Structures are given as structure tokens and as C-alpha cells.
Amino acid sequence: MGTTTACVLGISGSLRSASTNTALLRAAGALVDPAIGFRLWDELATIPPFDEDHEAEPPDPVLRMREAIDGAAALVIATPEYNGSIPGQLKNALDWASRPYGDSALTGKTTAVIGASPSDYGATWAQDALRRSLEAAGAHVLDTGVAVPRSDEAFDADGRLADAALHIELGEAVWTLTTAMTEKEGLCDVR
Ligand SMILES: Cc1cc2nc3c(=O)[nH]c(=O)nc-3n(C[C@H](O)[C@H](O)[C@H](O)COP(=O)(O)O)c2cc1C
Image (cartoon, rainbow, N blue to C red; front, side):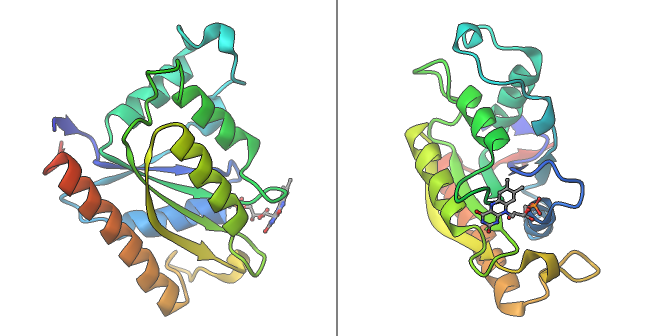
């Protein structure tokens, strides 16, 4: 595949400045081999509400998001859980990315889903819902995931997962993602 700024793109479903899901993505990104490269996409708040009237000529923020997704060989998406599912802003962005029908930016994209929440369950319902939507949009969603429970106390001062077992699980998910990505796309060059 061609050169990109990073082969793995991280998308956080939370807009909160102190987001634990963004922290989880940063922790995942730190585990990606520098030769592969990780970039956090932080423009979720710029994406307007989906409007099917404009899907053929989407607004600029949506074009930029599509460019970011197109330029990545793999995605890792961290989702909070809002009322048992994914936040509206994340679903909205994925709906834009999936359109027009037949031209989804997500088609075949190797993707891992992770999530954090302050409950005992670590956003597992949201992760299930996210996997379902991504699969409907054509992504290749890996059978791996990390559920971080009690997220408000899950990270140490360096932004690492304080629980060693969870830290290892995150490393395994990153490994699974980058291995699947390389098997599918070949070696990905980082600029
Ligand atoms: C509208 C709303 C609904 C929520 N519903 C759930 C829920 O169903 N399950 C859950 O575990 N947490 C729920 N929460 C708590 C979020 O998981 C919590 O705010 C979390 O920290 C958000 O992720 P972040 O730290 O990445 O922003 C909800 C929060 C909001 C704002």
C-alpha cells in the first residue's frame, strides 16, 4: 500500500476533554510499533448531522474524515457507552463514512473495537452495538476487544492502564490488529 502519515488511525467516540476512551486510545497508540505508526483523529466534533441529501457531496469535515480513514490501513475505535449503546456523535460519523451506498470508506477496513466506562462492564453493550454497525458498513471487524471497567480509576499518572492484565490485553488487541492489517495490506509505510 502507499505511504500514509500513520497506518493505524484511532477514533474516540467521546468529545469530553478528560475522556477515558481517548486515554485508552492513547494507551493503545503507545503500544503500536513506531514503524507502523498511530494517529489519533480528533475532529469528531466537526462532523455535522448526517443528511442523506448531501451524501453524494458531503461537507468538508466529512471529506477530511473520509481522507483520514482512507489513508489508514487499520482503525481502532474506542467507544463510551451511552444508554446501553454508542454515543450519537460516533454513530453519526460512521453513518457519513458508510455512504454513499456502495462507496463506504469502511469497506474491508481492518478494525478493532475497544471501550471504557465507569461501570463494572466496560462499555460492552456499546462495543457490541459498534461492532454491529461497523459490520453493516462493510468493515472487517476483528474478534478482539478490550473492556475497561471503572474507567475513572483505570489509568495511572503516565496514562497507562493500572491493571497489568488489562494492559497486556490491550497489547494483545493491538498486536492482533496490526498483524491482521499487515496480512491483508502488506507492509504499511509511515511517512
Ligand atoms: C447520556 C449518557 C448515558 C450514559 N449511559 C451509560 C450506560 O448505559 N452505561 C455505562 O456504563 N455508562 C453510561 N454513561 C456513563 C459514561 O460511560 C461515562 O460518562 C464515560 O466516562 C464516558 O466516556 P469518556 O470518559 O470517554 O467520556 C452514560 C453517560 C452519558 C453522558
